[in-house]
Length: 347
Image (cartoon, rainbow, N blue to C red; front, side, top):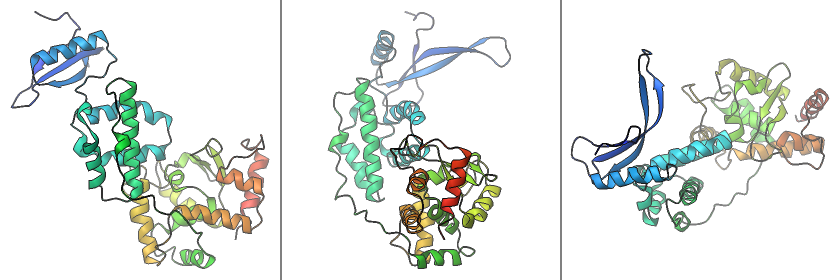
């Protein structure tokens, strides 16, 4: 018996397959390029071992079109979750999730309902990156599992049982000393990427904030940068560009397209992990400062600002720390001038 028009169809895929029967439904129509006929836009409901299973899935879809099919794969579920999630979070967090997802390739084609603790644990066990990357992968598992629970795809989250192994490494950090800062300046023209380290030291930007900054966020007339993440006080904040790093910002700005610190091919932003594990680490090893991490730059700014006697409220505004002052996030021209005067106190 033929299905009614617009109901959807079941068709058999070519070749030898474990699940040869595919299901698709029509979700929209559009006019063809020649403007002569209407063309259907399809949505796949997955593949099935038998025609009967495929027909049952098609019928279940029409009973509840918003229900997720039991055959949906890890990859397809990630796509649905990320479509909803990524518009609500910062660029740096998006990059973290995308980097974690790349480690999950062995799960991509598995139906999510069939994924258990041992599948998830194997991803962690096979990961050769550091503890923080493994934690990001587990966070991704938790997020996707919660999405599956919300949509009644599963009744239990196995992500909670994943073991990262060991404990979080100590995070005691130390600022760059004045001697080390001078060493950075002396090698500025000899080692690539030192400029990014100095920019962070003189602005207090987190590395994720700097990497997600677009050229549109940089004002070379007012000598300010706008960006931020993490907290409400930290988002969309204005940071004055210290006179010492203006040539560094200007040079980056003139050679950039969309992002101030682009990827090497210039086609997008640089990921946090690539910056930290490749470029930052390379500079630190060459200068014999391997105990430093990118976040030490932010600690250095805070230390130098305090030592220079900067106004406490200005420090909070620049670093994106919350303040009890209700005018803290209102940036007038006078406020920007004040921030510029204060940041110039740092030598």
